[in-house]
Image 1 (tube, rainbow, N blue to C red):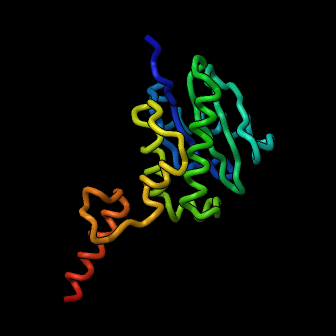
Image 2: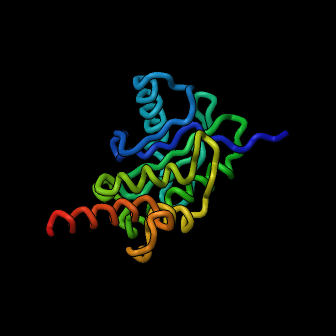
Length: 177
């Protein structure tokens, strides 16, 4: 029986190698110090490349890492040595495209920090426990909350972001009465 593809982590680092958003799905890095050391090693190994138009692939510490850069953000997806690079690349491209849609094409550190909740929701829509769920950027962005639905729709038919916005709006209205 063939196991589904697994991702060990998703890293979103700035142009200096500092964390913007990261999520680990593997116990290969048990401590925060180990995770930061891995992030630094990944950044150091890839910083001199020009992965701005195409997804690039490298290997580090028995892991396959696919990566792509946009302005001052560096996107990384890590899988084990046995993982298919094309699957990891499709995960990365799905993440990159979904973030681009959600940030309305303005993919930079400041905009990413302002919308960190949407980026983490993207992580959760793409990967669950290391298993790839979705790679289509429009589906991911739609689930995270790009398109608004009818604000009077039942909460069960709204995305998490839309439900929170609706609840916030109702709460604000009740305070103003």
